[in-house]
Image 1: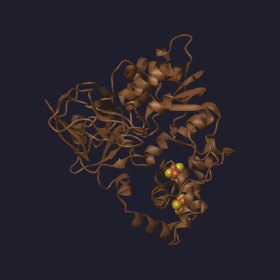
Image 2: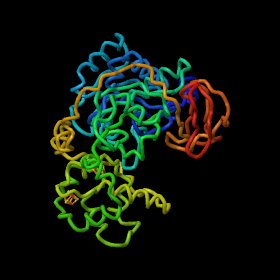
Image 3: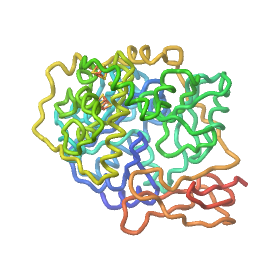
Image 4: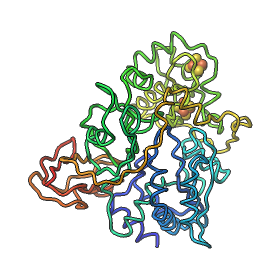
Length: 443
Ligand code: SF4
Ligand code: SF4
């Protein structure tokens, strides 16, 4: 079973829809004893996974069963937060009697959906530093990914996904958006922005990034668009330059430890202490063998340290992300691989309730339902990036002037590389093929 399912997934271009974009056919070829379906949707304001489970729980459960069989797992667990009671009911109803699929109810805390935390909550196993769930016999897939697995096995490639539009919009909504649609058009479909010159966070408020402009295309990993005023803290934090971030850290850090005490990876036993990293970058040099510099490899960039913990507006996450990028650029490998880890006894009392997080982020007024509007969204143009996934960019398989139908392959996995196929998301004509991606005009 594993090979046909993995092959169908590969042909359909399924990747981790929760943000990671890891090609799913590779995970489907693994052999583990537990499959975890991640429906935690722990980013505030996002509703795409819960709306999917509400509207199509059968498909999520079918995809979970298919993946469970593919990886040979004896257990399959769909994990959802307690607050999503209607989605929990829908998933429970979709599980047939005698099925190997179970439901796990998670507390309403952030970041419950982080793979390391989810695996620990579901199995009691701690993934080693720098490791992946496979190291402890687990595969984790997002629930949207699993619904795409069910589609893939029926021959339907990834051409669209659910996207929640929240924030300063007239009608918070979750829409089924063709991959490659410009984010500006998607925001318009949510009643448009209610403010002049808005900023858009692509993804969730904690881990998303600032959109370049409204023409930026939706990709396979975009679960939400958060429209905010330009002076909102989430926008100004992301807009800060690395030099500014460093200057503030050097001037203001009082070594209070709050960032480390709330760091979910530190609480799991990993050797990651953001306050020590902030102290280490007080000096001009960047010693590549300094443990609190290389610990950047252990950071999942959840944002807890900078958006919730630090009382002084210091950005340990941004510092750690810059260090990780710089070390990688210099060819330094992660030296942290401890596997004998003991979670801190206070961990369960240091988890942050989602409501408190929303309040601290200044998002309370936007924490509203965003019900699914399943109308057909047909953009005039789509731009299909060749790199919407982990691995190597897809190789264009079409040329300007070619006619394509939705579902046709327009980008192929390069020979022998890790990657994912890209498919046309609308019927139309290829306008251009460039480094930006493949542009298709509808018609
Ligand atoms: S972003 Fe901050 S809190 Fe999150 S894992 Fe990294 S250091 Fe820890
Ligand atoms: S929470 Fe802020 S002030 Fe306290 S140690 Fe961390 S970075 Fe420094």
